[in-house]
Length: 246
Picture 1 (cartoon, rainbow, N blue to C red):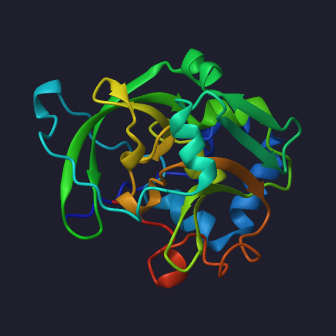
Picture 2: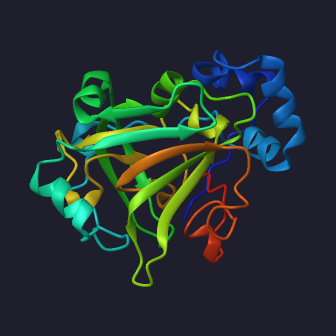
């Protein structure tokens, strides 16, 4: 699979890309956090503020494979489906000033972004879709990340056959990218349960396993060490790269 590297000219330019969240934080503190984090510097220099290509409506793929863990079938998720996700609340907590519990109505009211982008799977296939939703940075701005927050962790409704919960994570810089979207609609229709309803990530600048489905809770943390096996995601704990830029 072709991998693209977008090279940053300066660290200050990278910080400008974080403006939606950075305005809520002390800029000097954000700068020093980048300098202190080896992976943060790497992701800033390689790709976090480059843009994935936008496509035309006629480029949308007729088939978009479903390639993930099985759709959740527990009582909680089954109830949400049965009630058309009316009880759903997107929880945003952790190192934030104002924890959130956002119903779908609120998220739909915030839905102002539509982008046609390509999803690149680590297994070698690609597909193009139109996604409509809310920029992740806009949701995080409501909660106001704390000065010690470094990572955004996505806890999903799904789990594997052993009962291991699915999770994924981004740095604050990656979360601030304008194409990082909490998607509510795919190709003009609400996200289907098998595709991650009611809210899923779409991150066209990174490989598909970073685009977590069935997002239940967003947690801001200082360290990933105590979550899962400490590698930053369900697949990362099994050997995948944490930074999956393409």
